[in-house]
Amino acid sequence: MAFHAVIPAAGVGKRFGTSVPKQYLALAGSCIQTHTLDRLSAMPELSRLVVAISAEDHQAHELPYAQPQRLQFVHGGCERMDSVLAGLNALQTQGAAPSDWVLVHDVARPLVRPADIRQLMSALKEDPVGGILASPVRDTMKRGSTQGIVATVDREQLWHALTPQMFRLDALRQALLVAKSEAAIVTDEASAMEHLGYQPKLVEGARDNIKITFPEDLALAELLLAEQLRTGALS
Ligand code: C5P
Image 1 (cartoon, rainbow, N blue to C red):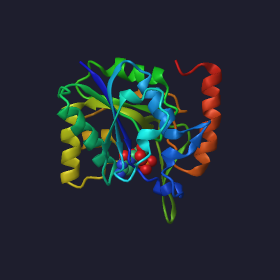
Image 2: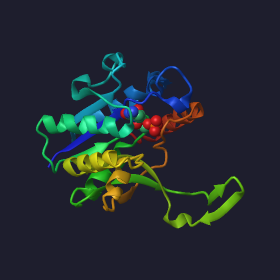
Image 3: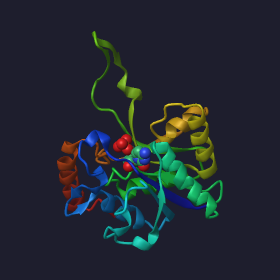
């Protein structure tokens, strides 16, 4: 049984508000994409690493990666799920088994801890479905409307969905194809699996695995990275 990684990196960072896709923004002397891919490629447990990039992206191949020979680039699509599908198709074409595990990890999450990825793999490797890294919600949660608060939501059952999200190659491919054909709104792999009636597992991961979405997240990421380096969180 093999574990592979698919890294959707074809987003243009619309919400970030810069002309440069956010994965190319500087983070501690390097860029977000280099950090993310170097962390994953340093894990020998991951057999193949497929990175889905935009067809207009001509710089992805040329970044100073630690292990460029470990990375395979394919063209992604309009939506995140199209990019993930492109990565899964590449794995399938190259002979990955239908039951192999695929860990889908956002390129915009450069701070994922290798220990959390290993925990996800060991907790779920015998699971029939798979699951995701997630962190429990800390704040009191409200549902709102233009009128004000509609309800206070019980936070005991609420989690932030992180990545990697780990599912079997063929099951995830089918789930994404169904979601696409039914125009279901799926913002992560787990929601595509849920749409088919599966119940993915939640594996608690560190909350510093943030997704860089807005400009202010970059400064926070620099601080969190420094703390990870200081405390030896990268082994
Ligand atoms: O935009 P957002 O932060 O939600 O994107 C999550 C991840 O999906 C990012 O890693 C982004 O590069 C990727 N993505 C993609 N293809 C798209 C849209 C987003 O690979 N068409």
